[in-house]
Image (tube, rainbow, N blue to C red; front, side):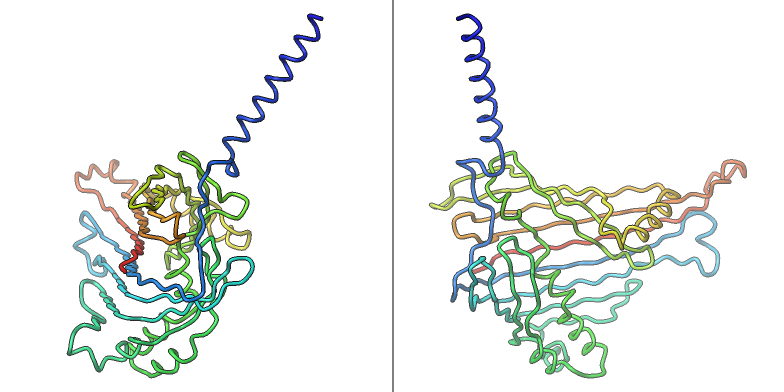
Length: 327
């Protein structure tokens, strides 16, 4: 009888443990569903800002020599757009029409303006980029936020055709890679991981092109910090922290070369972000992320030379993105 009681108690402990583990899992009852929701005819207005900055600076006696002038290259894009859902398939994937409402584009090289456009300025109305205002393109968006495909940009692309630098910039803004970055930077959990509670996480991988420094992959880890009630809606606040990661197999060779290159430098980097998601409507309220990387190399023979001001090269990269619902 004693053995039987021990067996029953042990079994109860095992069952209770399994229930507790299951209750903490992503699919646990009581969790909230982290996914975008679409319905034909739905519309929303958003403002996105995407910024890319690359800089190099020389320090010490080398900075005074010819050919060692530092500089900073900056590209900043601000776009207000409307998103209207045209159709939704059985898997929740939506065909969305994106219409450009306002646009700013700033490009500088060594602090000199290469292209400075603002659709709100009267003097810019004849700029080829102004032709994008009111133009539309269609994309397919999945419930996890990824742009599955760019369906149609033909009309908008035809309008901005031309040989001026601004024409080329406008055409580049309509390429699949740029459109996917604009509308698919945030990646929500996959279907089997969508029910989450406070403290739980999901992840995705993003790849950045650092131009002459090569490409680099990062694993973005999203952690649910809070799920609160606000004006009758359920709002989730999520923090993102990213770490370097080897990407797809075909990119790993490039990344290994970049890592070996980075090992020569004193490297510091941060990559963080924050999401505010309306779980009730399945719409993003706010999302932002920023990657900052800096590489510093100092003349290794400076100490032997007794130099108090050693030669040094400092390179920096900033990539930032923000999306905010404004309607």
